[in-house]
Length: 176
Image 1 (cartoon, helix red, strand yellow):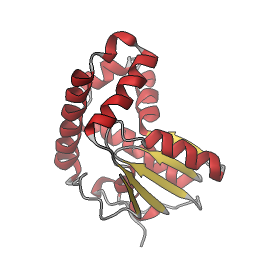
Image 2 (cartoon, helix red, strand yellow):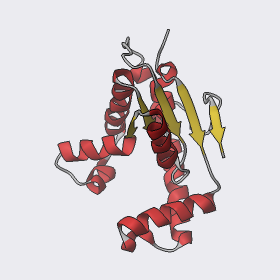
Image 3 (cartoon, helix red, strand yellow):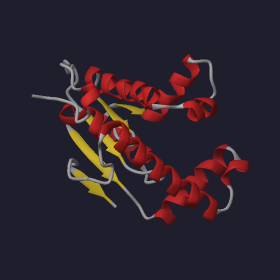
């Protein structure tokens, strides 16, 4: 029986896709870069939970920052439901912190990517600098924000779904 590893999504679902690859990991680990590369090489669509979050903000006529400030369990469930629906509907690569748990056994291959915090901070700082120089801050500031975000995400997903994001045993491939 195929099912999500998250109770809220364990209803009966029909999978109409043949290839679903999940790429998970913490902030700045390289999920998006690896996910896009795999999608390009395999000629699959690429999706990011961040895109689903931005779409939700737009639908609510809010900025991403506004939705982030008010986000609650319902917001996460809406984003995660979109992750599940996309994976069930079409061949794709989906990048998010918890797509492997959301898609569960519907995912054909699950990859977890991580990197040392200093490297992740450099990547995030570079990405922020490309988008909004004033948000970049110094490397220690970025590192502190990442560590706080990672801890907040860990606690939130543990509370909401009872999953341990640090448990990588469900993954087919772990890359550090």
